[in-house]
Image (cartoon, rainbow, N blue to C red; front, side, top):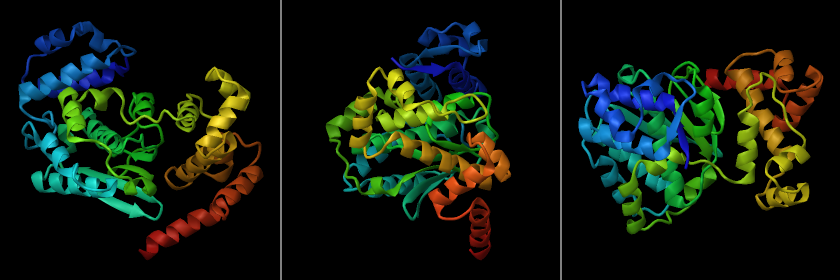
Length: 340
């Protein structure tokens, strides 16, 4: 059974407490001692978190859990989900779901933006100060990523997750929820992934949906669209490092960590259309671009953080990844923004 960091328990309890709901009965309902909320390394079982969210929903009569100016009546998500099931592609499903909520509420506005091979789900909360723990904003992002993955029967790997606030103390937990590049202090909440997933058709029946909704938010909380492919597992392992400098273990070490032989892992990655060198290159490329554009770090510092022996080696690799040098890449980006 998956577990949930205590931060999210405190945040959900705070949602209720801000609306004058007594905390004690909530914790009794899920079997969590009050003192556990102050233990920073604590975790609870996913089914306890599911019961907590369900109880807060019920007590507040609000699917938005008190984190917006106007409450959202129970049943809104289920109504939206039943409506979009009839469309023939993930793109149509998402666009119809977004249209529903954009008409239904002014508190959360969304858009789906295609950028060549990438699609970005953009989300705006009009009163973010009503969600001081960032709980519902992150939950909302998880909901849409997980629902999109569930409806097409594929765990969609994310390329990037952007947040409108500074990197929080629980940022390591965010890597489990969103195993991809993270950006903070951005103008919008957003999730991006490969646009090829938009053409996939829904593979779920109305009966599947009934089961999904009956247990909601169990699947949303405990398995937020995680990618269990070997590619996804390796990406997560490399991105979850705590050290400042990116470390890439040998292929043999990676294989041993999965309790498989190097030959078996190489074959499985080949079946997924990738390889360990390609995964490492993609991660280094993505981190390099983020550090160039979002963090404005010098080339020498980026080279060090990505584990290159010297800036010249990094520049050669960057040119191989993008076709231009780091300096040219930044100049092109600035020119593109100025022009449009």
